[in-house]
Amino acid sequence: MTKAKRYGLILLAGAITIGAYLSWHQPAVPATATASAGARAGAGAGSPDYFAFVPSMLGTRPDGHLAQQEADQLVLSPELIYLFDYYLAALGEKPLDAIRTQIRLELARRLQGNAVAEAQRLLDAYIYYKRALASVEGQLGSSKDPVQAARQRLQAMRQTRASYFSAAESSALFGSSDAYDEDAIARMEISSDRQLSEAQRQQRWQQLDARLTPAQRAERAAPTRVLALEQSVAQARAQGADENQIYRLRASSFSPAAADRLAELDRDEADWQRRISSYQKSRLALLQQGRDQTQALQQLRDASFSPAEQLRLGAYEQ
Figure 1: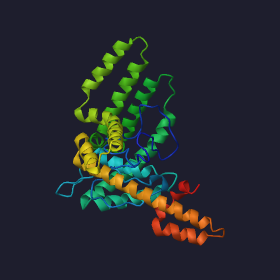
Figure 2: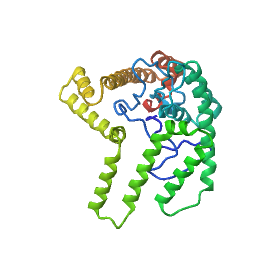
Figure 3: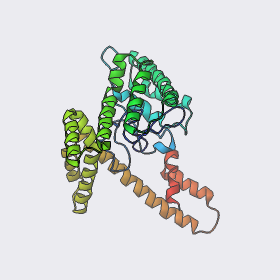
């Protein structure tokens, strides 16, 4: 969802607020393309067009790049959790049973053989795990120290997880998020230590940065890189750059595949704006005729927009 979620908490019962640094679910997939058209470019080139599962997901595609071995064995990675969380973010707009069914269909579309059954088993385990976390929160004592509270929650999360996943599964599915949370707690502790001077604080943050793997550093830097890139793109366009130049600029910052996805988003956005402009002119002409144009207006909508896209038209009809 970066139209929907990323660092928000997805729980199946109740809402839990645990602070800005530590979440009960996975950290974001490194953003490679999110700013151009207000939509996610997470799905690879050649992915099918998706109808929005719920209105809040308009303009997004499901997260998670799943893989399996030749023997139809599922390759465990955080990508599976990203896919689960993408759809579970629809709770409130869709019932859980409908969401579970949609995820199972998506798994069956992306995987084959034993990998499908294994992924679906892990989906059920994940849902039970999320439910259990809601109960665990009620059992945690209150603490005025946010660092201590974050540590308690992380420990409770790990202990709860052990009831639903093997050690190998937990490591593969949640290891990266645990590392992220541990780093976040360490940074919280440095920020809240009033005995440190600003120079000492900066030094300790730099020591934490040095411990990060290249992948972790890239993940932390990704949002800033995307924003900086799109600012450069806007400046280049203002100076007359053509689409080939824009593509090369993006490819040099990320990859040709990411540049392709961003270019696709640009085309989609341009097409959307063209259709909106045409629709607004035609709609205004109909309304100026001074009689009931309900049927004619609906025909106009149907001629240019899918049912899912029509959900967005209200913002353009003011």
